[in-house]
Length: 213
Image (cartoon, rainbow, N blue to C red):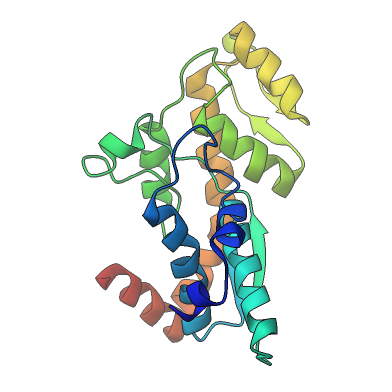
């Protein structure tokens, strides 16, 4: 309530950069940034890892803290939000919960999630598997290794998304090969995390608490 009182409607509307200007503004759209800002301030967290769509809430929280001369201001680190692995997440998420990749996922669970992920052949746009390669695998490793049989073209290493996309659209890179290589790369990234969870009692308790939520 205090965040809403200390900001004008114009200021709150300005923060809604993803709003469709052709559609009328609803009351919940004005309240939403206030709630997002409040959630950051109420939690005892120093650094937040947020998706880029929450940039405006983080900015609103920063302005509010400066207005109140609050010493401990939350720091927001923004990142690109990985796409949902499902074709229609709003419909399928209850039936098929494997819509995202979690740190505590086992190797088998990662493979199963990628196996059922939406990955249309020859289509790059809105392809979540290629999205993970673009925003996670290539920045992490600097390459994307695909292991294939000789009759399917043999092994190949991609150093850029443009090269991979060209092969995928042409059909020389199959969706099944992308799935296998993506699952392998994700498991390689998460293996140190799994070791950390197993070796730390505090981490085990954290995972247990998350599973109970």
